[in-house]
Length: 158
Image (cartoon, rainbow, N blue to C red; front, side, top):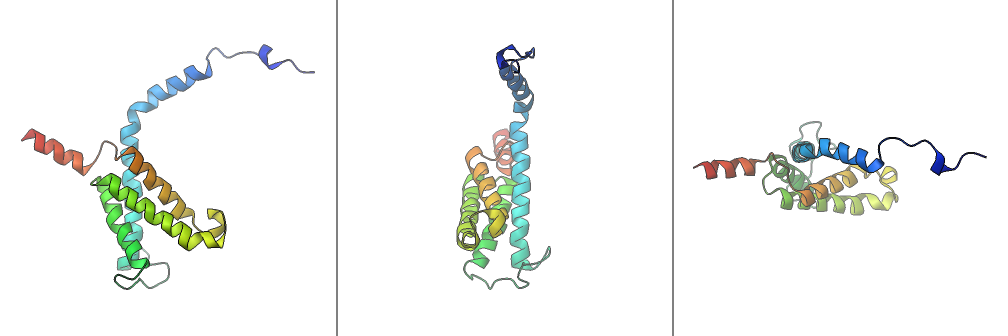
């Protein structure tokens, strides 16, 4: 029979102390990493919209883009392009991110869910990831680097 857990050798550092040390190193970077995350997600999302609307960057997956104002394809692509640009720039970030998140939730539940329960089964991986990524941005905000903050600093300097 092995030794009880309580008599096993202990490390000199408690788990809470280790977590606190890691947090103290990483926490100062949170607003910068959140900004970088927002920029990347916004850029990638805008590229999907541009591809669908303007037949660039590999074009629409079907080979032909939707007609202007066609539901839901054209509207989804317009939200992807416009919302992605707003999120990327950090302008009206939270409302834009919430709209993008909702559009991806719609895409997942309307377009993918009927094909299977899990995203890996129904091809809804990107929709689910974008939905949650944009929801995270909507909840936590844009981070430090935004066009809005640059404009506010310029106004206050005047």
